[in-house]
Structures are given as structure tokens and as C-alpha cells.
Image 1 (cartoon, each protein chain N blue to C red):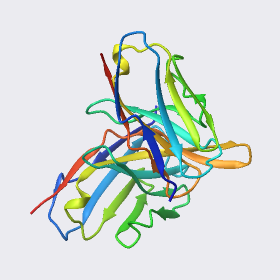
Image 2 (image 1 turned 180 degrees about the vertical axis):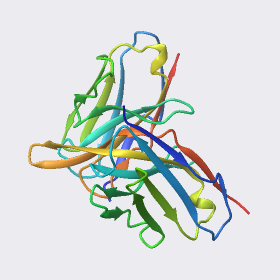
Image 3 (image 1 turned 135 degrees about the vertical axis):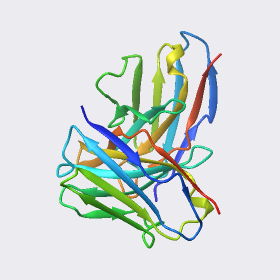
Length: 124
Length: 107
């Protein structure tokens, strides 16, 4: 069974970097796409970005200058780094596997396996 | 970005009642839509993908429909375990975007 688990500090100071790890078991991260999503207080969800089976990345333009997603295939882990955080980055962060399908002539993504989430508070 | 407008924001339903949640996209998403259920303290669980395909293991009382910009999730007979927050997500274009969520409670 595919399982994902996030880990990392629950408290980060403003202007510092947020670093999280997603450990995957039951499936190799050298297949498919692997993403980060966050949920703000009040339920708003934001897709942050993904890393592909080949190591290529795609980021939400709203975060592009601050975000980096990398991986360690030997440990079957991928990572999120978000720089220069502010209190507005306080959220629960999830990692997830992207799966895709076709509808008529169009390809679309969805998230079929999620980690349990890690709550990160940005505060001094 | 494609905006996803979800309604209602909250609703309560009795056991056995039929529940419908709506999601409207700001442009045609060609059925590239997924629905998720999230219970308190848990991660989101995929219910529906491709607007109408039921994810393995999801009870058949859940169904999805729609096309173009208008989509809906239906629960045919509300159960206690269906309480939670429901989200829609478009996966056609990056960045993928989510609806604001619908909180479903048992009446």
C-alpha cells in the first residue's frame, strides 16, 4: 500500500525557511509525480508544486520565487523548502501522489494518496 | 488561475437524506475534476476523479456528475460517517485549484 508521511518542525520564525520531508513507502518516487499542498486556517487549499519521476519540477507562480522541491531517490523521500516565510504561511502541509487521467482529449491530475499532514506555525 | 466556486459553504442533512454539493469552474475544465472528503484531523480522501469515476473502495452512494464549468457531488443516502468537509479540485491546468470546501454535518 502506498503511504506518505510528512515530517518537519512545527514552528518556524518569520523570515526563516520552512523545510519539510515526505517519506514514501510502497511506491517508488521515480514513478509518477509527487506534490505538496497546504491548507490554511479556514479551509482554503493551495497547490504548491510537484516533482516528477525524472526530477523536474513545477511550482505555483504565487510561490515561485520562494519554493523549492527536491528529492532523494535512495531514501524514497522528497522535500519542500519555502523561504522567507511570514505568518501567512501558517498552514497544514500535505504531501501527496499525483495520478492522472484523460477525459476526451485532455489530461488532468488528481491526488490519490495523501500524507497525514503536518501543521506549521510561523511565529516569533 | 481557474477559480473554483463551491456551494453551499455548509449544510446539515438527516440520515438517509440525499445531499448535493456544487462546484463551478471559471472556465471549461473538460471534466478534469476531483472530489475529496476530509474528516477532522485526517488527510483528504479521494472520492471521485474525472468528474464521475468512483475511486476504489468508496461507497456507491457517492456519485459525481457534470461537464463544462458545472459539477456536482451527490450522496444518495446520508450516513453518520459522511460528516466532514468536501472539496472539489480542478486538475486540467496548473496551478491546480480547489474549491473553498463544504462542511457537511448530520442533522
